[in-house]
Image 1 (cartoon, rainbow, N blue to C red):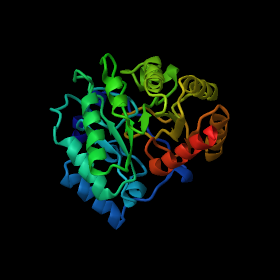
Image 2: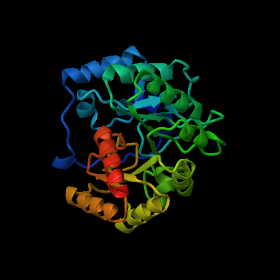
Image 3: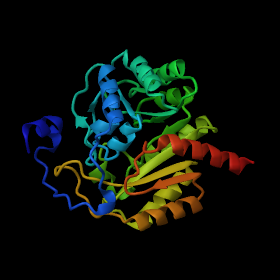
Length: 311
């Protein structure tokens, strides 16, 4: 492992190497080369912003940034947890930037986004887990572009009293919190989190604000069984979750969790059919699906599906 990787993930320095299998044709993407990609990148640098697109090594960055869609990552670029699937750096975070919400709002306006996803690193070091920064960012976006719909993808705010309530009270259009994987794999894949706490967050968000859209996502290809995926679907529906995303896990580095297998497009299509049959308003399930991938089009479809259901 090189020095840069050790600095980025010191907690993974002594972990065993898990060679990544060769990617099948359906999971490969083109390198980003478009003019719009460069413009989006320059805008993020101009305002000193972080994006999950870069920090989490998202395979869709070329397409999304080429369309001037970026997922804003607030509260810095250092996470207080060390999930085995995630490429975001782990360590001791710096101070919260008070100018960050305003810079996000300006960037959303300059990009001309109709829908924006705002996520963050875990900030267990903060008394509110970073909830107030989410609130300030939602307000800043609404101030700059009142017609832009806002989706938040939050951490679990574990042991942070009032954090969830504050974020939901800011009235994002979509409240998203990812379960990431099946409960059996939490100790090895998401050791700093608890499955049923994450499920409770989604349930509580809907109880606080019945009209909010709730959303969650999982990765597949980590060794989960189909029956476990279906149980997660049932758990999410019991919590009233509207929208489910399912995507292929891709290993960021050999020191991260290994890929058990590549799930085929036909299997993803089957999971989508099953999810819709269980009552989700929308299910996005493809090898390259990520929480914020095509989020603007998905939100329009989600809203349309609710209107149809209520008509």
